[in-house]
Length: 219
Image 1 (cartoon, rainbow, N blue to C red):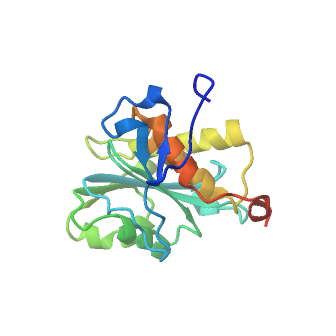
Image 2: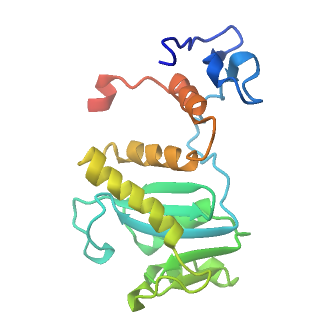
């Protein structure tokens, strides 16, 4: 509620009326925000390929343990972050060579300036097509080296730390079934953290999202 009143009704034009106090941006003409189109139903990834300088890392969904001794009940989260830009999380089945390669090829452009990872040996094969072009560099965490000039994974690790703190301090425990929803929430907040219209953007997503029924939630 904003100042005791919020008229979030759909107009004949398919728009959502927002509080007058939010009408401070060019995109909020006449107090209306255009609804986005319906989500794609073909399963394709609508997100653009990442370019520029991209960092990649992985962790467990509970933020504990090590990738080489993964317990069977822990979910793997793969993270990619374009420096000073977009963050992406993926609920992965494992951290095998083929899985890492799949996410790299589906999300990172061939025109990327550089992909930065740690020295987990499977990255060498997973990013071999970029290594051949001189577009993959690794930081030697196993040697306790965490930055060497421009070579580091500190940006993506800072994003992963937000996920870990959310699990440990806020949600306490999450299920594998709903992990993608938690990852989407962190992505949404992180990628919009500096936007002045965050409230309106959140409202737009709330209004256009499909209803989450108890039956679907607990199925």
